[in-house]
Image (cartoon, rainbow, N blue to C red; front, side, top):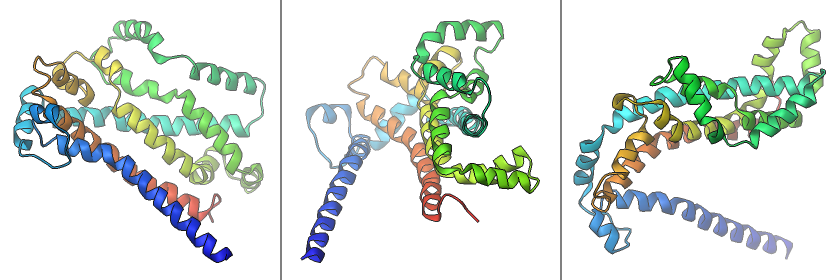
Length: 278
């Protein structure tokens, strides 16, 4: 009876997971289908059957902007910003978790406070600073500030405390390993699941960032993809361009899916292999 009950619970769990997966996939399916339909069709009816207006929507998108140029600009911003976020956040989190020094708790509390402050409050001051430094219409203000990511530091600090035994670092020091060597060869492999998770979140945030690029950038050829897509959404005939909007969104999602597929395998392999690797 116990075996039968276990199999029933397992099947129910799989069924619920399939339903959850279908519910998560449904918006993507609807987006792809609507990308092939005209604005009139989208307004009048709901269907999951593709239409014949894909080429028309494609031409409409290119009438307003070149999505490949926008994608290139977004890659230039999102990739370095994600790498800076992951590396320096991991370095800061490791220092706060493994080193006991005066002011450690104060720094950690300060990070928590900055997590609660909306970034939009500092936009005016940040823009004035960029103006004085002649960094307006440059990607530097969109990339370099990514080094300071309080939320990522907080998550990785808690992760380090849960998976990294201090005795492992002490053993490396006894063997003569330097601090940076221990960090790169021991700590980062152990932190790889957390780094992969936060790397995905950081890339999505930088890729979809709209407000700051819209303020900092003022040349069309430097606009990131979300800013370019806003020109299509703000067009005069929004209803006629609904299919084109769906198509532009579908194009913008492709890099996010690729990054998720790439990093997710590191999360799974690291968790299955265990926290401490040989």
